[in-house]
Image (cartoon, rainbow, N blue to C red; front, side, top):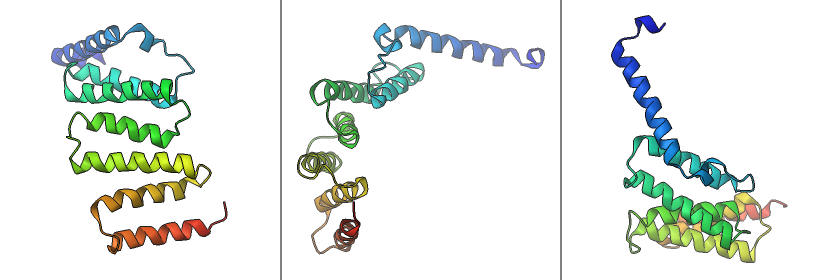
Length: 168
């Protein structure tokens, strides 16, 4: 096994291991010993951040995006503990988009509209099936780009009509 491995390969493996250890050492202890009560989405993004820190500098965009996502999910856990998973995800994505886009940008605006519709549905139609909820959100987002008579809007409306016929 090891005897046939060129020295450079061994050096590569060793340096990778050292990077991993270094990355783990830079993660605050509170992250290393996560509370089981912490939401799964937050645990997942923390793990992703730790992995990114192996390959990227702290001030790099991938690390900053992931940190923005973590900060938003932490805020939501504190301030909006009842927020549904899709709304948490949408808000975390918006926090990430803030690093790359101005609020006037369409990518950013679409995400704001997605969040507004998720919040409206959470308030006004909390019991609708997930598929119908997703279809209504899609329609709201499509309306950013298309007029009401556009085939994509008409298709989305037709899909909602069908989903509304299905007994809950």
